[in-house]
Image (tube, rainbow, N blue to C red):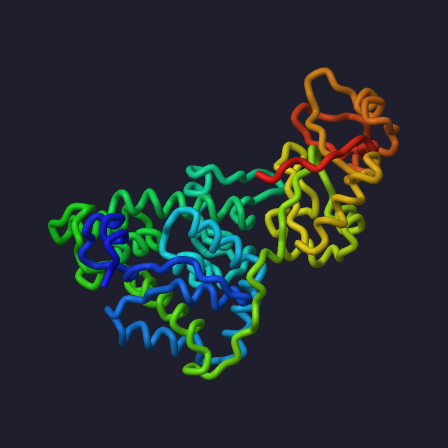
Length: 358
């Protein structure tokens, strides 16, 4: 049975995706804490069971999926909890992307939450040359939950909300209209003409939850996961290179690349955001290094867009370099440049500071 709080929140929805939600439970294992907060509905038991067994048909592959979730799960759970949403939504990326921030669909959806470019921009995800915020756990999670909240306002029923998240709200609206129902009507997904993937999306989510919360039943060893953040975001006041940050934080570039998939060329874009995710246990060390020497150069190169009236020699002088070096860095056959062209330029060391987390 749903709690009164959930009934009020869901405005009397006839078909719920979830049935109640208990308070957060203290646990030293994050998966255990997650499972303690879930409250699966008894509806669709056979479909959910089939999905759980499908997820765990290979114990190795399922364990790999759980390992991929490790850097992200604490952050998605905290965001879902902060909004008072069903904790099951924190693992929706398992179904959307397999917890792979670099996942891309043939329809151009991308990132952990598989946001379409238009949806991402609509909900404020930064996307520009060299940076795709859909692959950033912070930007993408906020936008995905904003989108789910918007869909909840349109459809009220969680099965329809999840269907709309998968197929697009227009697809669900048209399916409802085809049976003479308004978007706010509580029509079972099974009665709507929707793509097969959309019809089973909720079952796959609940099946994953059932599988992750019952390792003995499904015959695999669930990896232990500390109930604390494994990565933290550090903000800088200008462009930074992952290589230099890795050096200062005493970690590997590969580790930083793995959790900074939003950066396409191993540095923050010239116009920002200048946020780098680092292993949480290295954050204090990095901050100490930055406090100890404010002149450390955290970036080797930046970008400059050619303006009307610019010459290569003037740009070189402005960036404390030579015309020959700029030509070499940008593979220029001559000193002729056109307005609007983006040049790679060296950046001198200056004072950098860690900005507050946002």
